[in-house]
Amino acid sequence: MSNPLLLAKLRPLGSYDAAAAFDLRRVIFAAMRDVLRKNRILFAIPVNEDAVDTYFASLPSIDLTRSIIFLKRTKPLAAASADGNDQELDAILEKQHNTNFKADYGSLPFWRLIILEASGSSNEFTASFIYHHAIGDGVSGMVFHNAFRAALETASLSAADEAGNEGEGTVVPGEDIAILPPLEELHPLPINPTPSAPPAPELKQWTGGPIHAPCESRWSSLHFSPSKSQAFFRVCKDKSVSVTSGLTSIIATALFGILPPTTEAITCIIPLDDRIKGPRPIIDPTLTSLVDLFLLPEELDLDLMRGTTVSSEENEATAFVYNADTVVQSAPHLEHVEHHLPGPDGNDVILSIFKPKQPTSSNLPVVYHIHGGGMVAGDRFSAVTELLGLLKDVECAFASVEYRLAPETRAPGPAEDCHAGLVWLSQHATSLGLDAAGIVVLATPVKAQMLLSPMLDDRCPSVSDQQFEYGSPWSGVSNRMAWTHALGDDRATDRVTPYQAPSRAVDLANLPPTYIDAAECEVFRDPAVLYAMNMWRCGSTCELHIWPGAFHLFDGMDNPEVPLIHAAIVAKQTWLGRIMRAVDLDQ
Image (cartoon, rainbow, N blue to C red; front, side):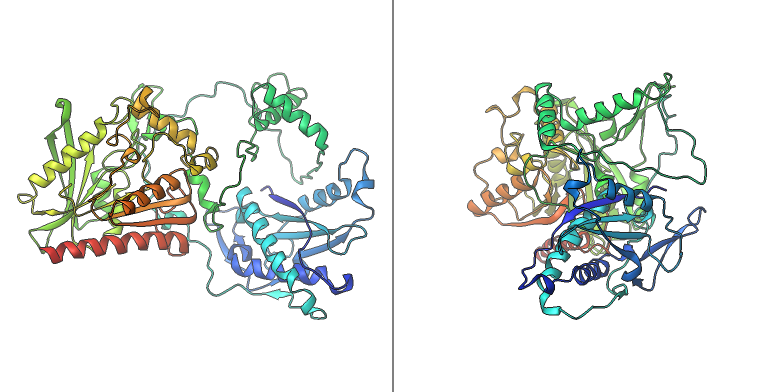
């Protein structure tokens, strides 16, 4: 298993009366104690790593004197190499990559921190964090970098006051911090029972040569001067390619020159996105390990978005498993009835209603669900299981509407389908045992509405649209493509009405009580804030939540071990419970 690596050239930020008052070792130890106590995974070691029943165990303590290695440069970096390469650091990193984490197994953690002190400086150093891939991925390295840097700043500010105090070298895990449970314990993970056969590879891809044990890794870094880097940036700009693409092409060309002539393809993965130009909020450290699970292609793939794949043998779509049966399996106290009703343009609208099998009332409030998916994907069963979890303590019915999707049906067609279902539900509520005046729209007589990461503005002009143009779940690129699917050439023109893009509405007076929920690190953040502000300006009531450090869909599954996710879930449950209780009082 490969060892990820994080490098950072750092200088603690404390101010000191004299150089002698600063003790780098003490500052590093203090910073690492803080990082360790906040990140329980750094105490974890894999057990039975090569078996099917592998699991994590926690070290009872970590001895920093054995896990942090202090080294001193033999000469200044500027004089070490004429070409700018750091040969001294390269030699250290090569040795580290060939050092097995299983040495002293059970007493040492699966990470090491190398502090390479600059020659002639008491507080400048290069930190190299080497860690086993079982406890973190590339994003985890950035989480450590940010946490370690913040802890260094705090520790260095108090270093002078603690002169002469070596500080403890042994750290024990915090009682209030736990390792997250396995994903399969948090989500049912439904799997398509009849998946399509994987497509045959079109090109012969290089997958590397055979690896024989014992294996010895080599390490070499390349240094590019500022002038050469700037020249490369200009060439990329002249050729209308990104720096990432240009760098990938250069590496691939160099590799093709030494690989066997039968090699037809190389896959390059470079965790660099030079398209992100300005500052933007960072993902909360407790969520970074999840963000990759939610990334979607920036160029929208409707088959992928709609959960279908095309069989190479039968050339027909096969849907993933989300249907009424999976919903009822997760909520066995409910029963499902499907209704077909006349919709606009002569098409049928399907309404799935889930009700308690043994209700205590013949006049139940009802949640009317309009599923997400950017108007181009999803169906009436999308996210229903998760949303029913928000209502676990509320006796109510749950109605979910199937609406036509873009680009096959342009806006406002999908909204008209949703409206037709809402009108039918209100008209037939009594015969269905429902309260027509107690309808809560989850997406007017309507009691209230809940808008979760709402897609409001087709013009996409906001700061959050620009900040998350690339490199985030449901990026700005995806958002504009979805709006174009929905509106065609009318997008971002005066021909768009408020019924197609709600942010176009000027008068938001007399709307029902509204809950709006969005993440800080997503394109929908600013339009949601502006919509709430417009509601308040017009005298309507709105409860707005912007979750700091969160990304689109971050709370798709509850996890009490992640405070931010759990807080978002509880906020929705609390609001829905309050609204539903108000419905009961009105009856």
